Image (cartoon, rainbow, N blue to C red; front, side):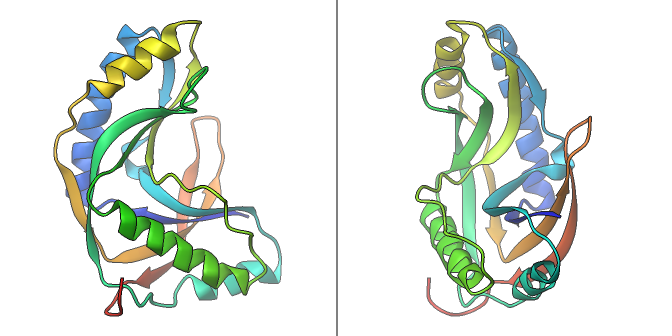
Length: 193
């Protein structure tokens, strides 16, 4: 099973992110990039991607995925748009956090600390929290610069919600993009951030 942990967007934030995706789609088209856009129902912010996991580790990770975090719920806003990688041919169009970004990074660190006990890891040396809106299928020379410039000028609508849980998902790749099945949910409660 391909597993990952993520922060879910609530329904209103998902609707606004879908609207922002439409605006970014028109900008990407103006830049000449061919993009496969994510389905709104699958929008999430990945905290830890584990890849293929087999056997008893799936059960251990699922059990860990249901243990609450001693970190208070927090407000997260998505206020930036960009592409990965930062130079060269773009592969991913994303929106990323403004307010709440430090809390997301802290939550990812706590999660990886928990996962180390289940034989997962090491944690990535770099974590850039983001919500993937689209994957660039084709971008000719010069289109990457144009796309980056257009996205840098983008003013996103207010996308904000309260993060109060973390979800563990199974990812199933398919011809129309991946589908996700939730395996566990862990609440954020009390504690110190």
